[in-house]
View 1 (cartoon, rainbow, N blue to C red):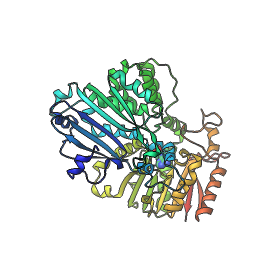
View 2: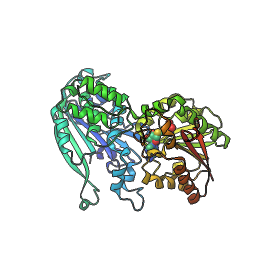
View 3: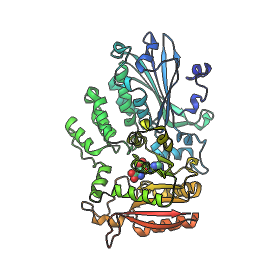
Amino acid sequence: MLLKPAIATGLYPQKTQKEYNVYLSISTTHQPATDLGFLLHKNPSNVHETSLSFGRAVIFYPEATEKKCTASLMLDIDPIDLVRGRKGREGESLLDHYVNDRPYAASSFLSVALARSYREALNGTSKQRQELADTEIPLEATLSPLPCRGREELACRLFEPLGYKLQLESVLLDDNYPEWGKSAYKTLKLKSICKLSDLLTHLYVLIPVLDNQKHYWIGSDEVDKLIEKGGQWLEEHPERDLIATRYLKRGFSARATKKILDERFGITDEPEENPDEEEEKLEKPIRLNDLRYEVVTDTLLKENVRKVVDLGCGEGKLLKRLIQERQFERIVGVEVSPISLERAERRLNLDNMSPTQRDRIDILHGSLVYEDNRLEGFDALTLIEVIEHVDEERLDALERVIFGQAAPPRVLVSTPNREFNVTFENMTPGMLRHVDHRFEWTRAEFQDWANGVCERHGYKVSMIGIGEVHEEYGAPTQMAVFKR
Ligand code: SAH
């Protein structure tokens, strides 16, 4: 029981390790082992919390003696509770959550948390023990739960060439019911004699590589980080191409991907263009994005909305527009992607806001296909260019959450008008505006869906076209304004 000492000392009373789902422990036996605290810039006698947009990272030392010292980073991510079944909904198996809800994959969260919590150590700097930071010492990392079913061999191919000894153990589905068997998740133990910054860098880059799912939210600066953090070891790694392509091609910045693959690794690969840039390029001549935010803000102002939630707020562009209007007393953004959340925080400069401004706004991590009582009690919810990113078969769930449970007086939903696409140069028939779009609706299809929502939940709807209207194909963006 890793946590026992900390719990026993009363340092860490709230949760036991079993309740935390994602963790990374780092140990050393280099003596005095407690110097690990200087390397990580975290005092072993304290519990350290880093707040992240998608939850919090808690670091503490279950073990801190001269001989051995272990720092554990635990992630407290709400949606993972869903997987544990505590908030699981009827009729949904726990596994479904994992299968369908990859935005919650531990891997990308853990990499973000690691970079945020151990920034100095990752960069190889230590205020008080620089010499030790530059020294190779015995280190052990334990990482769990790692989504790597069937990829045990991949873990070896990634870590062994870097000099690690590996041990992979299956995580039980539920410790209380061992008869249920093993889950698809593993605990990975890595041992090596190396610099701490090397270990952290390897983990930072390779954790997402092990996860075979799409991390479409990670943006172009990730590539720079890969180059920066990957450095020499990546160039010399026998699986260099695989690491570069898997890391980058999970939907990361495609233009930069091409650049790095071509120039740095000599891999001639034709990755798709950066989806966000592509969509912007298509729509640029009409500056549709800005116009959308203006129309939404205007509509909310006219409807006397005071408290509003922007669902799927992305990088917070609409939030930034809304906060300029004093009428909005309470503004909340909800977003599923941790990277977008980080960007939204930066865009809004939350840390440097005056306390009065800061009280008006919050950004939360959440998914709109799960009931969430944080969405209740608002005058309006907005979903701007979001529904087309949700699988069509999950729209019912989204509808229940928004119109059934939260059920605010006003809901604004905008989505592309597919008919308009033929007017975009560079778009071939049948192509959608963004690679992550699951569908794009004609005006009639959108109206149909909206009518159904009204019937099922007692709303009335009116449609607004946003952007320059084409005589035959209508406006590029269509927005439904639902009123209850
Ligand atoms: N509304 C923003 C961003 C639109 S892009 C704007 O207009 O600028 C769509 C956004 O929806 C992305 O940031 C994506 O991460 C988010 N998203 C997709 N599915 C989601 C879900 N189930 N829950 C919450 N956000 C989601």
